[in-house]
Length: 366
Ligand SMILES: [Zn+2]
Image (cartoon, rainbow, N blue to C red; front, side, top):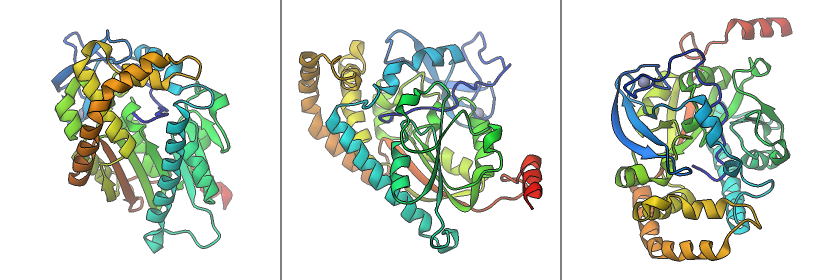
């Protein structure tokens, strides 16, 4: 879960499909199979009441949260998840988040331009689509660097939080976006929220220019943290995270979409270190899951400072361990966040050929 991790398509649950069976199994978000095995059960950190089964699909190997309905998701996306109007976290953390976005935007553009054939001619802006852009903070940095930016967010996302760049309310499947292609598409801590995962992955190549870059960041379900803390792992965040990704699954799936991973890492300092701290607290204080995170995420004036200081002191002994764990796992490729950069080889009949509407649109233009 990132600060500001907003999803975009979780409300579009596969309509009309019977999603749960009496035995507790549920449909895989990617392939639609009901065949799965349970990995473990975990509780919603927010309510500490509702329990969900985390399963692995026997058909496509995706790990996912079972039994999540649209009603459950709608209820669990509280206002607190989106934060207060201007800042979600303490100001100092907010500043660090913005610095991180600036560096991230520069890095993505450098990677896009690393292959000359993919680069735009001088003077032509690189087009960037951020799906689930949240407050569009990352896009604002791309905008400053001269990119042509578009964000997508859910209809119900508070409009007051969107600043600076063009944001489409809705989904990638909307008519308004049909036929539009981008040099860079970003799914930054979004994929794990998507219930129509198969449909979204099918759609993505239709919106990428050949040579374009797809940027994905997700919690790393194959990480050391995930394996060690299991149901207490901070980045599990069920039921909001409906899928749980591993590197090999993404590599294979992206490959079948015509995408090749050109860069990857598993280190995002804030996510990995905080993930360790909060997961450690969740393990020791199992009845008060995510308490520190909830206190940090509250708006100004609503914070209970003595309690916040108390929990921070409890977290203090874990800081050294968190730094060490994050560095070691980051270096060995088993860190808590999976950041992937994949180059699109181009489209043919199997990997995102323009559909009939796109062809018509192009014919209409010429
Ligand atoms: Zn599956």
